Length: 175
Ligand code: ADP
Image (cartoon, rainbow, N blue to C red; front, top):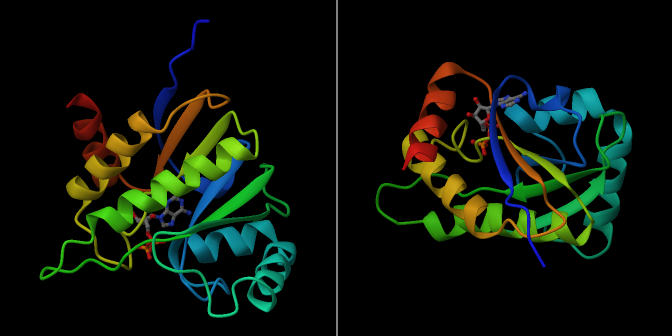
């Protein structure tokens, strides 16, 4: 059996405009919305996503979603089959939280594959409001994408909002 290698693709733009099987959201543990990517996904995706998140809070995730974990909902009006919500760690100078950031990418990819996804779009998790340095965040994202990229996945797309983030991911891919 031959396995097709997964394409790791960089796009500069808005993650809510992607047409993919799964869009990953840099959520917070409440699952009830926030700023940055989270705000944009709920705005563009419409109220169905929030309804699904509320149902999750009312059932298995009464205390919210722990850092490093991932969970799927409908994608509402987005051009995707599902949104996977994952909670990135807040950057800390004192404590190495890299394993938690790696877990966000790893759990999201595992869940996307369980859902049968061929294409997945990620933002640069934790590098916005949560303050993670871009080069470090990009390095972790690319390393985990390379390691967790089995079938049915065909494309892992990193959607970077600005030039700085795009260039950090370019540098990470060149390594
Ligand atoms: P976190 O709280 O995990 O840091 P943010 O949403 O604040 O998450 O930011 C994560 C990254 O996503 C940042 O690099 C930010 O510039 C970027 N970003 C913000 N909005 C969008 C968007 N609509 N599409 C893609 N990336 C975005």
